[in-house]
Amino acid sequence: MITILSGGTGTPKLIQGIKRIYDQRKINVIVNTLENDYFSGVYVAADIDTVIYTFADLINDETWYGLKYDTFITHEKLSELNSPELLKIGDKDRALKIQKTQLLKDYSLSKTVDIQRKNLNIKAKIIPMSNEKSQIKVVTDIGDLEFHQFLIAKKSEPKVKNIIFNKVKPSEEVIITIEKADMVIIGPSNPITSILPIISMKDVEKALKKAYVVAVSPIIGNNPVSGPAGKFMNALGYEVSAYGVASIYSSFLNKFIIDKEDIKFRKKIGKIVNEVEIANTKMTNINTKVELAKLILDK
Ligand code: GDP
Image (tube, rainbow, N blue to C red; front, side, top):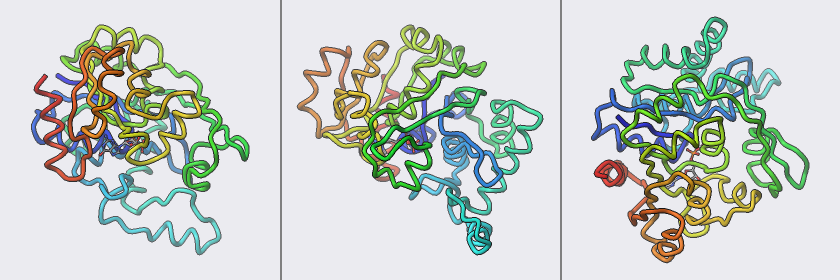
Protein backbone atom coordinates (compact mmCIF):
# COMPACT_ATOMS: atom_id res chain seq x y z
CA MET A 1 0.00 0.00 0.00
CA ILE A 2 1.34 3.42 -0.94
CA THR A 3 0.34 6.95 0.06
CA ILE A 4 1.00 9.87 -2.27
CA LEU A 5 1.00 13.55 -1.25
CA SER A 6 -0.24 15.66 -4.14
CA GLY A 7 -0.90 19.09 -5.58
CA GLY A 8 -2.51 19.58 -8.95
CA THR A 9 0.11 19.33 -11.72
CA GLY A 10 3.48 17.62 -11.14
CA THR A 11 2.27 14.77 -8.91
CA PRO A 12 -0.80 13.98 -11.06
CA LYS A 13 1.64 13.49 -13.98
CA LEU A 14 3.46 10.93 -11.86
CA ILE A 15 0.13 9.35 -10.84
CA GLN A 16 -0.56 8.70 -14.54
CA GLY A 17 2.61 6.58 -14.53
CA ILE A 18 1.99 4.90 -11.16
CA LYS A 19 -1.56 3.83 -12.02
CA ARG A 20 -0.30 1.96 -15.10
CA ILE A 21 1.91 -0.32 -13.00
CA TYR A 22 0.42 -0.43 -9.50
CA ASP A 23 -2.90 -1.77 -8.26
CA GLN A 24 -5.16 1.26 -7.82
CA ARG A 25 -6.89 -0.32 -4.83
CA LYS A 26 -3.60 0.00 -2.93
CA ILE A 27 -3.13 3.70 -3.66
CA ASN A 28 -4.10 6.54 -1.28
CA VAL A 29 -3.63 10.14 -2.32
CA ILE A 30 -3.65 12.94 0.25
CA VAL A 31 -4.46 16.10 -1.67
CA ASN A 32 -3.76 19.74 -0.88
CA THR A 33 -6.85 21.84 -0.09
CA LEU A 34 -5.13 25.18 0.60
CA GLU A 35 -6.61 26.93 -2.42
CA ASN A 36 -10.17 25.58 -2.16
CA ASP A 37 -12.86 28.24 -2.29
CA TYR A 38 -16.18 29.21 -3.83
CA PHE A 39 -16.10 30.73 -7.33
CA SER A 40 -19.14 31.56 -9.46
CA GLY A 41 -21.32 30.00 -6.77
CA VAL A 42 -19.61 26.60 -6.88
CA TYR A 43 -17.03 24.98 -4.64
CA VAL A 44 -13.70 24.67 -6.44
CA ALA A 45 -11.20 22.15 -5.11
CA ALA A 46 -8.79 22.44 -8.02
CA ASP A 47 -6.13 19.96 -6.91
CA ILE A 48 -8.68 17.36 -5.78
CA ASP A 49 -10.55 17.62 -9.08
CA THR A 50 -7.33 17.24 -11.03
CA VAL A 51 -6.50 14.08 -9.07
CA ILE A 52 -10.05 12.73 -9.57
CA TYR A 53 -9.92 13.42 -13.32
CA THR A 54 -6.43 11.93 -13.56
CA PHE A 55 -7.60 8.61 -12.08
CA ALA A 56 -10.74 8.67 -14.25
CA ASP A 57 -8.62 9.34 -17.40
CA LEU A 58 -10.64 12.49 -18.00
CA ILE A 59 -8.02 15.12 -17.16
CA ASN A 60 -7.09 17.81 -19.65
CA ASP A 61 -3.39 17.03 -19.42
CA GLU A 62 -2.33 20.00 -21.48
CA THR A 63 -3.55 22.56 -18.93
CA TRP A 64 -3.75 20.21 -15.89
CA TYR A 65 -7.04 21.83 -15.09
CA GLY A 66 -10.54 20.59 -15.90
CA LEU A 67 -11.75 17.90 -18.26
CA LYS A 68 -10.45 17.17 -21.73
CA TYR A 69 -12.83 17.92 -24.61
CA ASP A 70 -14.93 20.18 -22.37
CA THR A 71 -16.97 23.11 -23.70
CA PHE A 72 -17.20 26.59 -22.18
CA ILE A 73 -20.72 27.70 -23.08
CA THR A 74 -21.67 28.82 -19.54
CA HIS A 75 -18.31 30.53 -19.03
CA GLU A 76 -18.75 32.51 -22.26
CA LYS A 77 -22.39 33.33 -21.53
CA LEU A 78 -21.40 34.76 -18.13
CA SER A 79 -18.94 37.05 -19.88
CA GLU A 80 -21.65 38.19 -22.30
CA LEU A 81 -23.83 38.92 -19.26
CA ASN A 82 -21.10 41.14 -17.85
CA SER A 83 -20.23 38.67 -15.07
CA PRO A 84 -16.88 37.33 -16.25
CA GLU A 85 -15.48 34.48 -14.21
CA LEU A 86 -12.03 34.59 -12.65
CA LEU A 87 -11.68 30.84 -13.21
CA LYS A 88 -12.39 29.39 -16.63
CA ILE A 89 -14.71 26.55 -15.66
CA GLY A 90 -15.79 24.12 -18.38
CA ASP A 91 -19.40 22.94 -18.66
CA LYS A 92 -18.87 19.29 -17.70
CA ASP A 93 -16.32 20.28 -15.08
CA ARG A 94 -18.92 22.67 -13.66
CA ALA A 95 -21.41 19.79 -13.33
CA LEU A 96 -18.99 17.95 -11.03
CA LYS A 97 -18.36 21.14 -9.09
CA ILE A 98 -22.12 21.74 -8.71
CA GLN A 99 -22.48 18.17 -7.46
CA LYS A 100 -19.68 18.76 -4.95
CA THR A 101 -21.35 21.99 -3.78
CA GLN A 102 -24.66 20.16 -3.26
CA LEU A 103 -23.06 17.22 -1.46
CA LEU A 104 -21.18 19.60 0.84
CA LYS A 105 -24.52 20.72 2.28
CA ASP A 106 -24.90 17.27 3.85
CA TYR A 107 -21.41 15.82 4.00
CA SER A 108 -17.81 16.69 4.83
CA LEU A 109 -15.37 17.33 1.98
CA SER A 110 -13.79 13.90 2.61
CA LYS A 111 -17.13 12.11 2.25
CA THR A 112 -18.10 14.26 -0.74
CA VAL A 113 -14.89 13.38 -2.59
CA ASP A 114 -15.33 9.72 -1.68
CA ILE A 115 -18.84 9.71 -3.17
CA GLN A 116 -17.58 11.39 -6.35
CA ARG A 117 -14.64 9.06 -6.85
CA LYS A 118 -16.88 6.02 -6.37
CA ASN A 119 -19.38 7.44 -8.90
CA LEU A 120 -16.50 7.57 -11.37
CA ASN A 121 -15.43 4.02 -10.49
CA ILE A 122 -12.07 5.15 -9.15
CA LYS A 123 -10.52 2.47 -6.97
CA ALA A 124 -7.78 4.62 -5.43
CA LYS A 125 -8.63 6.52 -2.27
CA ILE A 126 -8.59 10.31 -2.63
CA ILE A 127 -8.25 12.06 0.71
CA PRO A 128 -8.57 15.85 1.10
CA MET A 129 -5.82 16.94 3.50
CA SER A 130 -8.39 18.77 5.64
CA ASN A 131 -12.11 19.37 5.95
CA GLU A 132 -11.42 22.83 7.29
CA LYS A 133 -11.20 25.98 5.20
CA SER A 134 -7.70 27.40 4.72
CA GLN A 135 -6.86 31.07 4.51
CA ILE A 136 -3.96 31.95 2.23
CA LYS A 137 -2.47 35.33 1.42
CA VAL A 138 0.25 36.12 -1.09
CA VAL A 139 2.15 39.19 0.11
CA THR A 140 3.49 41.00 -2.96
CA ASP A 141 5.04 44.30 -4.01
CA ILE A 142 1.58 45.45 -5.14
CA GLY A 143 -0.12 44.42 -1.88
CA ASP A 144 -1.72 41.33 -0.37
CA LEU A 145 -3.47 39.11 -2.90
CA GLU A 146 -5.82 36.15 -2.72
CA PHE A 147 -4.12 33.07 -4.18
CA HIS A 148 -6.18 32.94 -7.38
CA GLN A 149 -5.94 36.71 -7.82
CA PHE A 150 -2.16 36.31 -7.83
CA LEU A 151 -2.13 33.21 -10.01
CA ILE A 152 -4.77 34.08 -12.58
CA ALA A 153 -5.68 37.77 -12.53
CA LYS A 154 -2.04 38.86 -12.01
CA LYS A 155 -0.55 35.90 -13.93
CA SER A 156 1.94 35.21 -11.07
CA GLU A 157 3.81 38.36 -12.14
CA PRO A 158 4.11 40.44 -8.93
CA LYS A 159 7.20 40.08 -6.79
CA VAL A 160 6.36 37.77 -3.89
CA LYS A 161 7.50 38.81 -0.42
CA ASN A 162 5.76 36.19 1.69
CA ILE A 163 3.15 33.44 1.65
CA ILE A 164 0.97 33.23 4.72
CA PHE A 165 -1.50 30.46 5.46
CA ASN A 166 -3.19 29.23 8.60
CA LYS A 167 -2.82 25.73 9.96
CA VAL A 168 -5.81 23.44 9.57
CA LYS A 169 -6.65 20.11 11.16
CA PRO A 170 -5.84 17.00 9.11
CA SER A 171 -8.88 15.06 7.92
CA GLU A 172 -9.56 11.80 9.68
CA GLU A 173 -7.65 9.46 7.37
CA VAL A 174 -4.49 11.49 6.83
CA ILE A 175 -2.34 10.20 9.71
CA ILE A 176 -3.49 6.61 9.49
CA THR A 177 -2.85 6.33 5.74
CA ILE A 178 0.68 7.68 6.23
CA GLU A 179 1.27 5.27 9.12
CA LYS A 180 -0.04 2.25 7.21
CA ALA A 181 1.81 2.93 3.96
CA ASP A 182 4.76 0.78 2.84
CA MET A 183 5.98 3.90 1.10
CA VAL A 184 4.97 7.56 1.11
CA ILE A 185 5.62 9.35 -2.18
CA ILE A 186 5.88 13.12 -2.34
CA GLY A 187 5.48 13.87 -6.03
CA PRO A 188 7.10 16.80 -7.79
CA SER A 189 4.59 19.34 -6.52
CA ASN A 190 4.98 22.93 -5.41
CA PRO A 191 6.76 22.52 -2.04
CA ILE A 192 5.33 25.76 -0.62
CA THR A 193 1.67 25.84 -1.63
CA SER A 194 0.98 22.14 -2.27
CA ILE A 195 3.17 20.07 0.08
CA LEU A 196 4.02 22.39 3.00
CA PRO A 197 0.30 22.86 3.80
CA ILE A 198 0.02 19.05 4.19
CA ILE A 199 3.23 18.44 6.12
CA SER A 200 2.75 21.37 8.48
CA MET A 201 -0.54 20.01 9.85
CA LYS A 202 -0.50 18.57 13.37
CA ASP A 203 1.19 15.14 13.71
CA VAL A 204 1.89 14.74 9.97
CA GLU A 205 5.64 15.29 10.27
CA LYS A 206 5.74 12.88 13.21
CA ALA A 207 4.02 10.20 11.10
CA LEU A 208 6.30 10.90 8.12
CA LYS A 209 9.39 10.44 10.29
CA LYS A 210 8.28 6.87 11.00
CA ALA A 211 7.42 6.11 7.35
CA TYR A 212 9.62 5.35 4.33
CA VAL A 213 9.39 8.58 2.33
CA VAL A 214 10.54 9.19 -1.25
CA ALA A 215 10.23 12.59 -2.92
CA VAL A 216 10.80 13.84 -6.46
CA SER A 217 12.17 17.35 -7.00
CA PRO A 218 9.85 19.77 -8.84
CA ILE A 219 12.83 22.05 -9.42
CA ILE A 220 15.40 21.33 -12.12
CA GLY A 221 18.46 23.58 -12.17
CA ASN A 222 17.29 26.81 -10.58
CA ASN A 223 13.77 26.81 -11.99
CA PRO A 224 10.52 24.94 -11.49
CA VAL A 225 9.34 22.91 -14.49
CA SER A 226 6.21 25.09 -14.42
CA GLY A 227 4.34 27.49 -12.14
CA PRO A 228 5.36 29.90 -9.37
CA ALA A 229 7.19 27.48 -6.99
CA GLY A 230 10.49 29.35 -7.52
CA LYS A 231 9.00 32.70 -6.51
CA PHE A 232 7.38 31.17 -3.44
CA MET A 233 10.53 29.33 -2.31
CA ASN A 234 12.55 32.47 -2.76
CA ALA A 235 10.06 34.50 -0.72
CA LEU A 236 10.35 32.06 2.18
CA GLY A 237 14.15 32.09 2.05
CA TYR A 238 14.79 28.71 0.43
CA GLU A 239 17.35 28.25 -2.33
CA VAL A 240 15.48 27.65 -5.61
CA SER A 241 17.03 24.29 -6.45
CA ALA A 242 16.63 20.59 -5.69
CA TYR A 243 18.76 21.30 -2.60
CA GLY A 244 16.26 23.93 -1.43
CA VAL A 245 13.41 21.42 -1.82
CA ALA A 246 15.43 18.76 0.03
CA SER A 247 15.97 21.18 2.89
CA ILE A 248 12.19 21.54 3.34
CA TYR A 249 11.70 17.74 3.52
CA SER A 250 15.00 16.66 5.11
CA SER A 251 13.65 15.90 8.62
CA PHE A 252 11.67 12.90 7.33
CA LEU A 253 13.00 12.11 3.83
CA ASN A 254 14.60 8.72 3.10
CA LYS A 255 15.23 9.14 -0.59
CA PHE A 256 15.24 12.15 -2.89
CA ILE A 257 15.05 11.81 -6.65
CA ILE A 258 16.64 14.66 -8.56
CA ASP A 259 16.94 15.27 -12.27
CA LYS A 260 19.90 14.07 -14.30
CA GLU A 261 20.67 17.70 -15.06
CA ASP A 262 21.28 18.23 -11.33
CA ILE A 263 24.08 15.72 -10.69
CA LYS A 264 26.08 18.70 -9.39
CA PHE A 265 23.77 18.93 -6.35
CA ARG A 266 24.12 15.26 -5.42
CA LYS A 267 26.90 15.67 -2.85
CA LYS A 268 25.36 18.72 -1.17
CA ILE A 269 21.94 17.05 -0.91
CA GLY A 270 23.59 13.83 0.32
CA LYS A 271 24.59 15.73 3.44
CA ILE A 272 20.95 16.28 4.45
CA VAL A 273 19.16 13.27 2.89
CA ASN A 274 20.10 9.60 3.27
CA GLU A 275 19.82 8.55 -0.34
CA VAL A 276 19.89 10.66 -3.49
CA GLU A 277 18.95 9.11 -6.82
CA ILE A 278 19.44 10.62 -10.27
CA ALA A 279 16.76 10.15 -12.93
CA ASN A 280 15.02 11.75 -15.85
CA THR A 281 12.27 13.57 -13.95
CA LYS A 282 10.86 15.49 -16.92
CA MET A 283 7.56 13.73 -17.52
CA THR A 284 6.87 14.65 -21.11
CA ASN A 285 4.96 11.51 -22.18
CA ILE A 286 3.50 8.33 -20.72
CA ASN A 287 6.80 6.44 -21.10
CA THR A 288 8.76 8.93 -18.99
CA LYS A 289 5.95 8.90 -16.41
CA VAL A 290 5.98 5.08 -16.17
CA GLU A 291 9.80 4.98 -16.03
CA LEU A 292 9.86 7.40 -13.10
CA ALA A 293 7.05 5.49 -11.37
CA LYS A 294 9.00 2.20 -11.76
CA LEU A 295 12.14 3.75 -10.32
CA ILE A 296 10.23 4.95 -7.26
CA LEU A 297 8.30 1.74 -6.64
CA ASP A 298 11.31 -0.59 -7.13
CA LYS A 299 12.60 0.60 -3.78
P1 GDP B 1 -0.29 23.00 -8.63
O1 GDP B 1 -1.24 22.56 -7.57
O2 GDP B 1 -0.92 23.25 -9.97
O3 GDP B 1 0.69 24.07 -8.20
O4 GDP B 1 0.56 21.72 -8.96
P2 GDP B 1 1.63 20.90 -8.16
O5 GDP B 1 1.98 21.55 -6.89
O6 GDP B 1 1.21 19.46 -8.13
O7 GDP B 1 2.82 20.94 -9.16
C1 GDP B 1 3.53 22.07 -9.52
C2 GDP B 1 4.97 21.70 -9.59
O8 GDP B 1 5.16 20.59 -10.46
C3 GDP B 1 5.81 22.80 -10.16
O9 GDP B 1 6.68 23.24 -9.15
C4 GDP B 1 6.58 22.14 -11.31
O10 GDP B 1 7.93 22.52 -11.30
C5 GDP B 1 6.41 20.68 -11.04
N1 GDP B 1 6.37 19.87 -12.28
C6 GDP B 1 5.46 19.93 -13.26
N2 GDP B 1 5.77 19.02 -14.22
C7 GDP B 1 6.90 18.40 -13.82
C8 GDP B 1 7.70 17.37 -14.41
O11 GDP B 1 7.45 16.84 -15.48
N3 GDP B 1 8.82 17.00 -13.70
C9 GDP B 1 9.17 17.57 -12.50
N4 GDP B 1 10.28 17.15 -11.90
N5 GDP B 1 8.42 18.54 -11.93
C10 GDP B 1 7.30 18.94 -12.59
